[in-house]
Length: 310
Image (cartoon, rainbow, N blue to C red; front, side, top):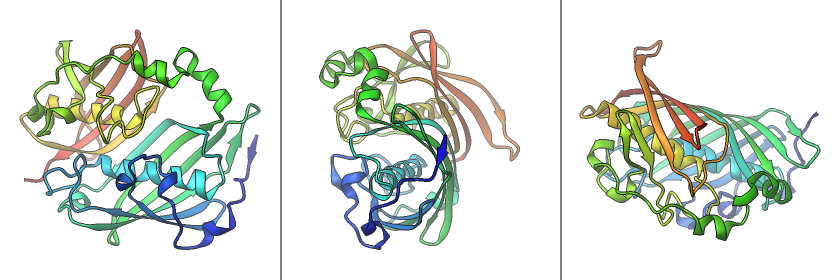
């Protein structure tokens, strides 16, 4: 049954509010969101600050990586949900669908930048067991220049239901204790990285097939304990896979369309498989990446890429 969103707390109408604790990061230095402004139940404007350098999303201080835009949208939706709409902070967010289109030119020249994300929400769906389902449309600018758009479908689950959904993995400590150790990575240069620690792929058993490599001690990808592989890690794996396929050419994944079907567990191998390459309607390199765990497709990502700036 569809309904309007929960009435936001009164202080959400102000331009300056403490939002960092609602962005889903333990290390507050990794929070990009600075302000939240609520226009009405369905429209929010989020201000973010992009640093001039970032250990993971702009390591070379040259260009920002496209997933920084998706991380900005992720943080914006978390802040809107928890702080702007009053979703209890103990609810757990789960992605179902993400479509992101970022302007490659707007990523160039990493320098301190002001980013604004305008988010429009469709009326939410409230389910009998307490979950809340959202559909969000985001339009972003960087220093006033169009940056990108995104559409995200996600659900906030109450703790009791999340525990039921997670089954044997519901106990965080046990899930982390069972996590597979990260396998030796493929060459960092093959995926456009300089540090092996930032590589999320290990060699597979066939061409165009890798193993997901999850280093649960990574300070950014696993900023706080998870009982499953986070969505941002899955997207990074997909982007690294298409870059590995394109090597030695360097590419920028500007369009990312993802469907998430099931949680990717920490204690089971997950294969990252790339399909054949074709071109989209604008002539860009396009490829589908699938994540397969326990013989089931856990997620798919379709990526359209442009040649990276030189």
